Length: 211
Image 1 (tube, rainbow, N blue to C red):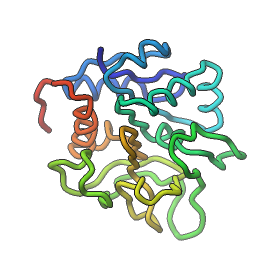
Image 2 (cartoon, helix red, strand yellow):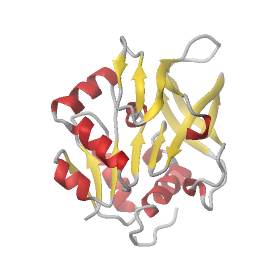
Image 3 (cartoon, rainbow, N blue to C red):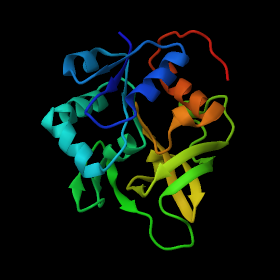
Image 4 (cartoon, rainbow, N blue to C red):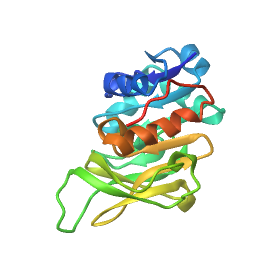
């Protein structure tokens, strides 16, 4: 099989798909549980509101599918809202229950002199340098667009942060589950190489592509 991109009606599906293909991996967009569970790796994208996204996932039973992926050995990557959905809850437009794969909450930026949404290029700071996502990579800038950020309950789940008034969780990971708050496919060379390192966790070969 290939890399499954979960289609639940909300997300930058095609830009993520094109980025994966550019890195030399086959990919497909699907809402079918059997196809997703048979894939070599799974990406959960997301653009929009947390509550709406969870409603879409539940209506199609894809919430259970993603939880099954997380409980197995397939590498799973949540991107932007997709990363937030991995956590327990969100306060975006009310209180909403998330997928509960990682413990923690999603909260709005408050206070400070910074603008909301957080939009633009910010530098990553690696917290767990031994993570396979960072192999061969130095800290650099990636592109963020978000008004809410994640507060993980387990500090070791935080692989990288960025400075936006305070330390903001940028990358999370535990076992085979990962999340990136920014858009790797829109983050130049570093973003694409982070995505490549995730795809390498599938153990599948790719065409050699460098940026």
